[in-house]
Amino acid sequence: MTEIFGIPVQALFGQLLIGLINGAFYAMLSLGLAVIFGLLNIINFSHGAQYMLGAFCAYFLLEWAGVGYWWALLIAPIVVGLTGVIIERTMLSRLYKLDHLYGLLLTFGLALVFQGVFTNYYGSSGQPYHLPDEFAGAFNLGFMFLPKYRAWVILASVIVCGTTWFVIERTKLGSYLRAATENPAMVQAFGINVPRMITLTYGFGVALAAFAGVMAAPIYQVSPLMGANLIIVVFAVVVIGGMGSILGAVITGFGLGVIEGLTKVFYAEASNTVIFVIMVIVLLIKPAGLFGRER
Amino acid sequence: MAERAAAVANAPPRLLVVLAVFAAMLAVAPFVGIYPVFLMKALCFALFACAFNLLIGFGGLLSFGHAMFLGTAGYVCAYAAKRWGFTPELAILTGTAASALLGVIVGALAIRRQGIYFAMITLAMAQMIFFFYLQTPFTHGEDGIQSVPRGKLFGLLDLSGTLPMYYLVLLIFLAAFLLIYRVIHSPFGQVLKAIRENEPRAISLGYDTDRYKLLAFILSAVLAGLAGATKAIVFQLASLTDVHWTMSGEVVLMTLLGGMGTIFGPVVGAFVIVSLENYLAPFGQWVTVITGAIFVVCVLAFRRGIVGELSAWWLKRGR
Image 1 (spheres, chains in turn purple, cyan):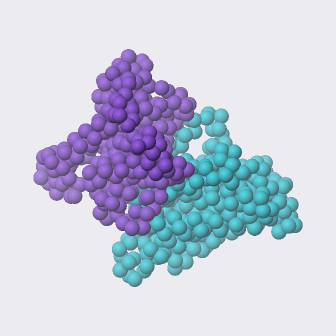
Image 2 (image 1 turned 60 degrees about the horizontal axis):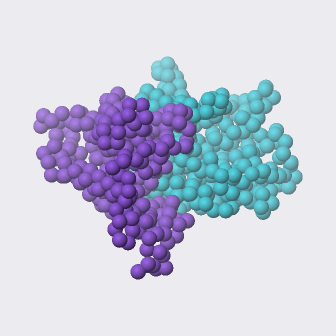
Image 3 (image 1 turned 90 degrees about the vertical axis):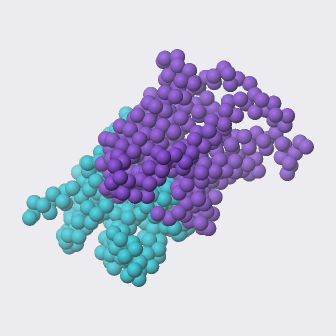
C-alpha cells in the first residue's frame, strides 16, 4: 500500500495534514466572524489584520521580553482583544443604527491601517518565530510522520471551537447571547446589559483571531500581510457555511481545508481557487449556505 | 443610507450646466499646465468610480470585487491590441465586452444574496479571478502585458501623442457619464432607487427586482470595463495591480470620499485620491495607512462625502 489512485500515500497524507491545519485556521477565524456577526450584525473585515496582530504580539513578546510561546498564547489574545474592545466602544458602537455596510467599510479601513503600519516597519517578508522546544520532533504513525506542533494545532483548534460551541449553546451566558441575537431590545428589557455584552462579544471574537495568529506564528512566518489573503478565503468559507450556526462554521472550516489539501494532490493548479468554486456551486444550489438561514 | 438620496433629487438641468462647465474645464486643462497623463489616470478612475457608484449609490449593492471588471477588460483589451493587432477602439470594445460577459456570470450569482453577503461574494469571486490571471500564461504573471500599442483610432488618427489620447479619454468619459446620468433619471433608475430603499415593497409592487439588480450589475460591469480597457490603452499596460483586492477597496474609498449616491461625488473622490497618491508616492507604505485612516474618518464623521456635504450645506443655506 504505497499508492492510492496513483498518488504516493506519503504525499496524500502529507497534503491531508496540511489541509487539516489550514482547516483549523479557517474554522477558528470563521467561528470568530460568525460570533461577531451574530450579535453585531457586521462583518469584521479587520479579522485578518487582528490575526496578524496576534502573531506579531507573540513575536514581540519573544523578541523583546523573552516571553515564550505558552504565555503568548494567553497574553496576545487578551491584548488584541482589549484593542478590539476599544475599537468597539469608540467607533463601531456609533454605527449600529446605520446600514450594516458601514461597519464593513470601517473595519476595512482599520485593516488597511494595521497592515500599512506593520508593512512599513517589517516589509512584506516574514519574520521567523522560534518553535518551542517541547514541540521538536514528530510522532511516527507508521504510514507517515506527524510533527508534534501540527498535531497540537489541530487539537487546540478543536478544543477552542468545542469550548466556544459549548459556552454559546449550553450555558446561561450563551443563552443570553443567543437571545440578544434574536431580539436585543427584549433582552435589554429583562435587565441584561446588552451594550456591554456586545462589546465583550466583539472583544472575544477578536481575541479568537489573535489566538489563531499566535498558533500560526511557528508554522507560517509572522508577516504583515499574513491575514490579508487568508481573510478573503475565510469570507468564502463563511458564505459556504452560512453564519447561522457555530458548529456549521467549524465543520465547514475543517472540511474546506481538507478539500483544499486534496486538490493540491490531484490538481495543484486549482488549489488556490477550489474554495471559491465550491462557493459558486453552493450559491447555485443553496444560496443561504449549507448551515445558514436567510436573515 | 438614506441621507445620500437628497443630493440627487434637486434640479437635473442645473446638473447639466455644471457638467458643461466641468467638461470645458477639462478640455482646456492640458493648456494651463496640468499634466495630461495625470488627468487621463484620474478620468479613468473617475469612470471606474462612477460605475461602482451606480451599483452602491443607486442600487444599494456594495460590490467589493469591482477590480475584476477593471482588470479583465484591461487584460483582454491589451491582448487584443498587442497580439491580434486590433485598432484601439476595437480593442477597447473587446475588453468591455469581456467585462460585460463576466458581469453577467458574477452578477447572476452574487444577487442571490443581499447586503454583507453580497460584498463577501463579490470579493471572493474577484479573488478567484485574480488567481486565474496570476496563473494563466497570457497575462504574463507579475510582468503583465507590457508595451501595448496605442495604435491609430479607426486606423486613421495616431494616438501615440499625448493630446489626441487625452481627448479620446475625455470623450469616452463624458459619453459614459452622460449615459449614467440618463440611466439614473430614467424609469429604470427610479425602480433601482425604490429597490434600494425598500426591496420587499418594490417586489410587492410587481417589479422583478432580481432582473433590475442584475441589469444594474451588468451595466456597472460594462462601465468599469470601459474604464479598465481605456486605462490599458493609455498606460500601454495591463497588470495584476488592476485585479487585486486593494483596487476594489480603492474604488470604494473614492466613492465614499466623494459621496455615495451623488452624481459628481465619485469623480471628485477619484481626483482627490489619485492626486493624493501622486503626492504621497515617496512615502511608500504610509499611503496604505492614510487610505485606511480616510476610510475610518469618512465612515465615522463624513458619511455623505465631499459632494454630499457640500450639497447638504447648499440646500440648508438656500432655505
